[in-house]
Image (cartoon, rainbow, N blue to C red; front, top):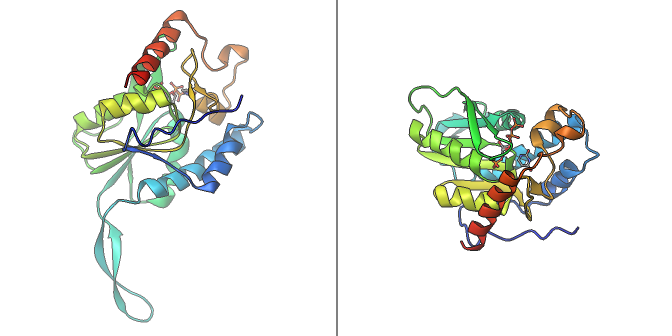
Length: 247
Ligand code: PRP
Ligand code: URA
């Protein structure tokens, strides 16, 4: 089926969808079911590099005196201390690319998984120190589906004291953009694409399947196909879709 990608940027000014042709090219390779885990991981890294570059376009710099081989000049250095917050486990594949861009960043891991029936995020790991040590946090998670994991991560970071938060994802569903934007309109969302919709199992359509399984090769047969589905799951998705339609 030909995907109709909704344009939500007018409704959500915090949403930034990349229009770079290299992003579109690499994202298609990533989505392709023939792409094996090794290539999938490479593409996640390459796309994160490109999206990260765009997501950091509004960071400030301070003057830094340097000397070229020919003469002194005023250079620039990134001002705010930056924290990378990969959401385990699928966000792990995005960390190295961001560290290549900003080697001085701190990395703070948060572990969440989606309960398969309720689609609610369940926190199982949190390595944040007691007080916030960074000013700008970039949440790294390839998929923004219902938006539950992203909203929960922002809640955790705000309670921690993070001043500015951006979400960097590869693919978003309209339902997830709406959920996160309504809960946290101050959080910028940077994505390679907004897809058509969630299916009744809470998976992004057309999407790419399960980002964690595809990166780490954890397919255990048909039982591990994206989502097992239940009446409860379908009702959660219908509720999100009603909320999006009445938005
Ligand atoms: C995936 C993904 C997000 C979450 C998005 O993680 O990496 O964290 O789902 O879904 P949401 O927007 O509906 O909350 P998953 O729960 O599959 O865990 P995994 O990364 O360990 O595979
Ligand atoms: N998590 C994924 O990995 N893929 C989806 O489509 C939705 C949530």
